[in-house]
Length: 198
Image (cartoon, rainbow, N blue to C red; front, side):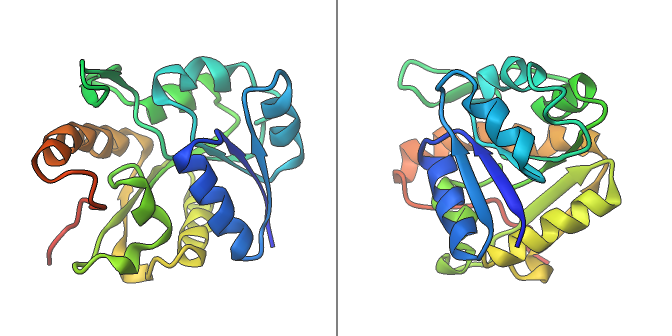
């Protein structure tokens, strides 16, 4: 059992929190109530960033002390929204939210994952007819091993998880969000994920 704080109580955060609790972890969900994120982060070993990506950097940079020596699992994508509310452009072209978070939080071990799929797939990967891929990006090997274990708790088989390397590789997975609006407009909100076929 691991103590986990999920920052964000929307569809992504709520879905992850429920699944992690079912897997036996002690989970706290922090909403936007003043002080909730700091209190949750202070007592957790692992923090999941499921806040809207456009505001994630400011929110988490303010928690630098609470996040010291913790693992931060970043599942968000920082984008501007188009007129239909779907992602339009990347906020950090030539970089990534994960890199910005790691720079702002040098004593926190940031791991990017689960950001290349619609939220239901994060906790039910086996429901897709084709095998999805979960990617890991981060500088700390032990932190990535810990996050890999969390993914297996969520139903991800180890062979479905690909470690891309350092935090800079999050640029590639975050850019995959640009597929999402086009796929949704074409086929609706049917769950899907980016997959590497081998």
